[in-house]
Length: 271
Ligand code: G
Ligand code: MN
Image 1 (cartoon, rainbow, N blue to C red):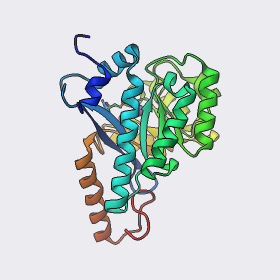
Image 2 (image 1 turned 90 degrees about the horizontal axis):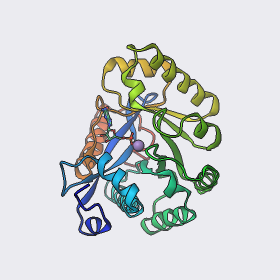
Image 3 (image 1 turned 180 degrees about the vertical axis):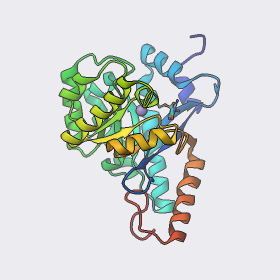
């Protein structure tokens, strides 16, 4: 890659974090969480897939991930103090970094510095690269869960992990890859896979999230299968933090006007 994907670009403030909301099926599609997504503001033409892959290769992914984690903690702190809102936010972490013993300590130091509860942070295990040591990964996930963090199997069904991860890793959330969601009603295999994952999640007590929901038909389909939450362009695109604040504030204003009950995570008592 001709562009210099290194820590100096992070230090120069060239990156920012966008947020894509996730919605609860049970609670009339209330926003219940969001995924933090890195964007290279100084290189808008470069897709995150391209530079994240390059940084996983050149060893700068740890710095990038910790930049996202710190931004997320800062933003949660900001939302708590300015709006009284405590959103649950997911961070994408490659398995090699997650397996590193120091990762948990760094996450604990960050949440302590910004006074953020671990229950508000969800670690998504990405499937873009293979786990170098599955047992080390399992042990890291166990420690993260014991410390109170949520852990998600991201892009489930795509990439490197699949059923072996499901068997071994004590995750709390499973995110059905958007490839299979996009094939719903079109390909029998997608219908079967998306249905089986809903069932596996239910039977193992995991939260099932359908990713990449772009149409009402897909939303209806995953709702009928019992998915707990949805994420996708139909309901919300990734947005900069400023817009995310307005989205949450606007949602709260509409909600209060309607005089309905307070939703679960975003609007704690007293807001
Ligand atoms: O792999 P992961 O699920 O973390 O990827 C998130 C990426 O998926 C983001 O870049 C986001 O823009 C993209 N994305 C989110 N929702 C949708 C969707 O409904 N359709 C498509 N095609 N992409 C989506
Ligand atoms: Mn993800």
